[in-house]
Amino acid sequence: MTILSFDFLRPLLLLCVLFAVGGITAHQIVYSRSWHQPLDVVVYPINADKSIDTHNYINTLSSDTFTEINDWFTAEARRHKAAIPQPVHVSLGKRVKSVPPPLPVDQGVLRTIMWSLQLRYWVFRNTPDDDSNLRRVRVFVAYYQGDDDKPLAHSVGLQRGLIGVVNAFGHSEQTKQNNIVITHEILHTVGASDKYNFFGGPDFPHGYANPHRQPLHPQRYAEIMVGRIPTSPYSSYMATSLKSVRMNALTASEIAWYD
Image 1: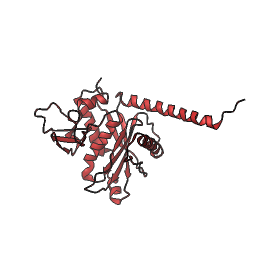
Image 2 (image 1 turned 60 degrees about the vertical axis):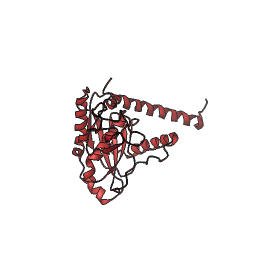
Image 3 (image 1 turned 30 degrees about the vertical axis):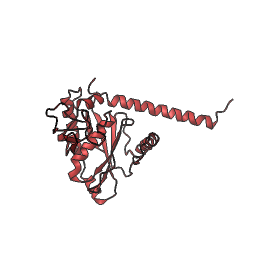
Image 4 (image 1 turned 90 degrees about the vertical axis):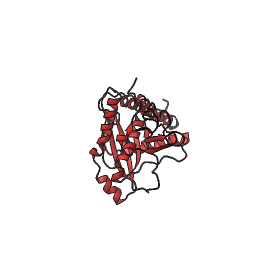
């Protein structure tokens, strides 16, 4: 009888794991974009800077904090005549004590792949419940007090794994803008792409809520995958709430609301 060596079994086991992960990921992508039923989104808050002010802010959060996200998706689905009347249902999950691995500054292909694997392992270890993740998006929101003159690190949304990592300010006056960022990352998990230009502003025409408006500027709304309202070809400002944000036809197509 031939005994298989560990050197042979190790790559075989790794290949089996990769096939299993690939199968689960494919299932997640297909069913999260089928829109046969509302997509569950769970927000897990993190006191990222360990401050008492951030702790107190998180204490004020509830599922009602994110109702405007649900309402925004419902309004946009109606405006785009999507087949589903209520696309998402966002709720507040349990607190998470650990902070996710930071996105590498040098975003080369290899580093990004390694970070993605590290993040997915971190999510596996730190999801504080045992619910199925085949049809839900997990958004880990790291709250900071921050500095007024310094932006927080970039937030990310991964379609593979249906995972969002949001860096947000733990201030009540920032809640509505935090919800813009959370919505933006939810859309990344179901296939929407960023629509920034080289300078970080709205790319024309894809980054405009209404690229056919006459006159073109100023725009009335920000496109959700940019979050900034264009006032001229060279200037824009951050939307203050989802009331000033729309989804354009390209984004609706990317998330499979159109054939």
